Image (cartoon, rainbow, N blue to C red; front, side, top):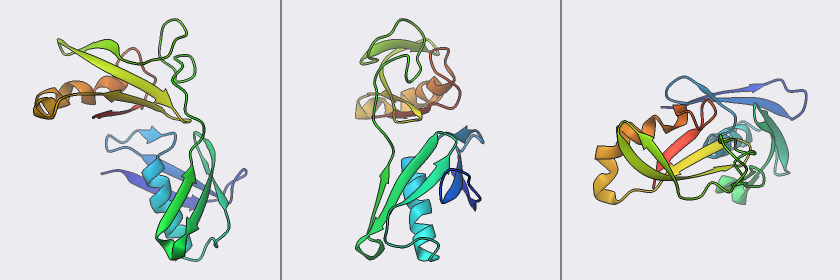
Length: 153
């Protein structure tokens, strides 16, 4: 289970928000975490119907709670697949369908950032359980920065 911490005072946004992954590492941002946190702020009447800002370790994001709390929009930022912006080691390139070796298995992965690095490892449904230990450590692989979000799809 992930852990969210806030609201805390902020110099750049209405509030500060911290998100901790299940392994205890701090994430730069979390889209779902920010949506839940935004709804919490709205429920507690700490924000209104207007757009507000939340400071995170990955930068300031804009959030809006709409339709009486049924819709929460968080502007995470512009997506980039460029290796130097994610970052992923090696020459500048779009990181799409690259090979990675984890625990003796070869996988294909894609990486992106919206202010926080993500690694997606596409696998077939029947392979999810067998490869879970391998792709779960992808965020700690040499190619990625600390605390990259990893998932299979």
